[in-house]
Image (cartoon, rainbow, N blue to C red):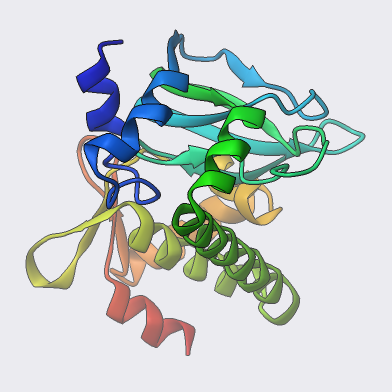
Length: 230
């Protein structure tokens, strides 16, 4: 990948957007790129942590599996996102699987080199801590949802969260999710079953709180869903 296109991508990542061209040079010199086909894995849960990745194009599903092979989706990452967030400044294993959903171009930097860059740029380290802090808060919120809310409420809260992450505003306060999500994927995000998600979505559609457009994208009404929740 050309120097300038690599720089353009990395400076769209919140971590690097305030750096000057000169400050970006050592990062770009370390960065490499690779194209991954849909359905392939960047790494598997338990693999050694070797690189930090930045998504230039495509989508990446981060998920865990238990002893029985059951899948729990942690996140669906978009262009501009980085992963994994675990393992900096410590020897560790990949905490989850990373699967390519759509053909993707990833830029990656070896973790030891990236750690040295963070040491040399403490202002970036501060941003990194904020990113990690946001991830911790998100995981805490998800845990709270599972403990304090029933499945119907969890699905509503999931749709609201996805709307904030992947939604664009449309007419009359509706939000369109720009990423396709199957009922199975939604179920795997909250540890439920596809059948339960399907029944709940049918209920929400009857109440005109959610619908699916002709291209299969979900559209939600956040205000109405919050009223239904509370």
